[in-house]
Length: 198
Image 1: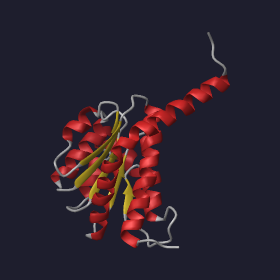
Image 2: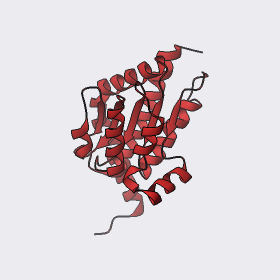
Image 3: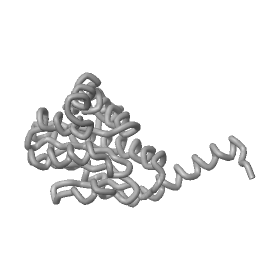
Image 4: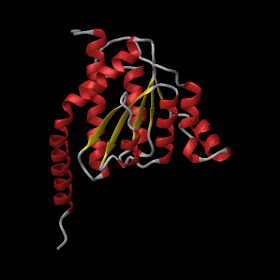
């Protein structure tokens, strides 16, 4: 039996609300992730961010909130979305392999003490996995935002890394929770670095 468009929309809202409620169990890990990013920024480091597709948009969203601001008036914070530069992405993909589009940028831009934030709803994206491996070689900590089973990305996690794995199997739901996590991290970073402001 066909369900109506209105019922389909209602189902999306219901599944999204459920995913957000389930993800509240990650509260402590989100605080730990914010602490990792705050320590990086306090020590003069920068945040590199990557993802594919909708997760590339998440990387742009996160870097924009850090470089400019979310709510609080504060100085800009050093963050780079590795998905932003079309000339770099397409030249690496054309001259080498698509799997290297982020790792080459991490190799060039990343330093010990920086943090790589890697978005992958499945945890299976080869270019994300290579970026994580390169960051670890450069003694950068990684913040891994994943979903489903965590995939191969979860297996790469080192003792210095933090994984925020959304307990859902639907890509759309995982990305919706990732959006909320971005806002939580931005809020925590602002208040830990700059304190309460009117």
